[in-house]
Image (tube, rainbow, N blue to C red; front, top):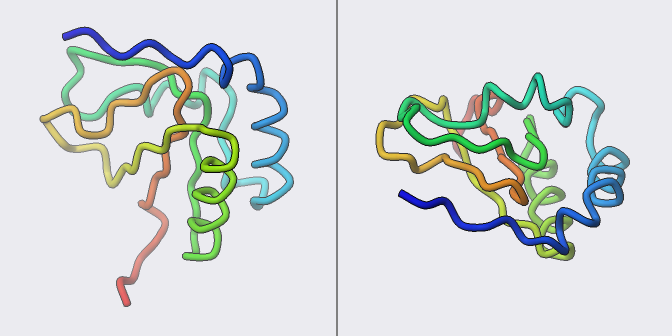
Length: 109
């Protein structure tokens, strides 16, 4: 399987995109360190992996909405992720994507 190429324009704007996310989210809701994002490179299907641009770990629907709005404005793909136990590759990021992990959310209304 060939992963899609990352958008060079998004990668060129990486720092400004991450700065916008950092200003909009609590400090512990944004993971950008490549060592820490490695845990999100793949789901339980480990045959394919790719480091994401960043990982957002919201606690509220407002934080989810903020991430989605900012990513839409910046043209950044968003990959939703639950616990990462899927075996079908449904949570595989690309290098220009933000993982939106919902593991901290504990209620469905």
